[in-house]
Image 1: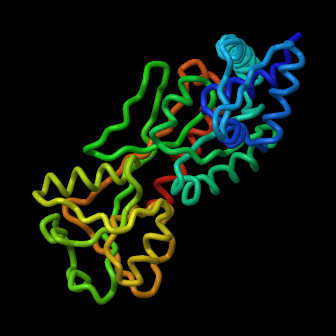
Image 2: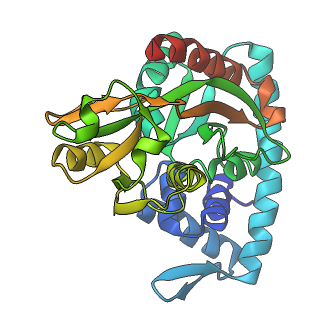
Length: 301
């Protein structure tokens, strides 16, 4: 009989494209995932992974087995959901994904409350880019995701995914303390023309929003520094190297030499919780969404 945990590891590699990414999603080490798949190869007497450059690819047999594993995992999920629903208490494992600032600014308090109130609930957290989370939820790799979009760049919700609004996260323009704009009480988009920007790398939701918004205002942004971490962006601003648009959620304390100014109209990203419709019967999903929606207004205030 095929081992379900090994099938889960193969399915994760199929979805994420590499052993390392699968390990992050599952909360394992890469070597543990590799060992699971090696055991599955011995169990099935079939080669499942082949070397290609520095990575691996699934063989045709592995792709067929991964598709079967997805069906089996869905059946197991339905069975676990039914049992948990009958017990009426959040329990079992809950795989949660969140983008970086939510993982830092919102999830610690939420996960702590869930752990205190429901000791039989084993919640695991993975940090994943918002672009990826809807597909991972729909495929059953993640149980619950905290994601976001911007007003001019809505995040599509694929078929097989439900979502609920958690709240809105305003953003401010952060400038060096000695910058001419630092004396303003409020900024407009026209004030931002000709500035050197510190922003997230291309392909991120925040980067796309900034470029599209500034272009719509009639000027091409000068993206001088592209770094993922907002704390690094703030350090670069404090060093006088440029200005940045930084959401308030998860924002570190402003360093000396940096000033946050409101932008009119205020840029807002909206936070969502996402899950599969069938999983909505799980008390763990309902409770986690409730705690998220309860915590966020207090945090925002």
